[in-house]
Length: 101
Picture: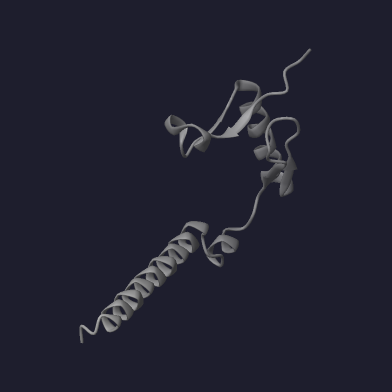
């Protein structure tokens, strides 16, 4: 029985965070899929990972899209701002209820 290969996002392991990891069979399948995608525009990867393929896209596509990590920063900032506003509102309400002012 021939191995199908393994290919994973390394973020599942602290020591491999940020890496694409796999065994030799999986990495060779990825390399072959990349070579095909560079010629044909896309290629499928079978029985290797959760990823179904590789696509070669023009760099203009990436210039026009907002990156996910930038979206996360914006969301985190908005949530933090709301917590600050809530805290100030509760503090103000508490001060008024004790007739501090």
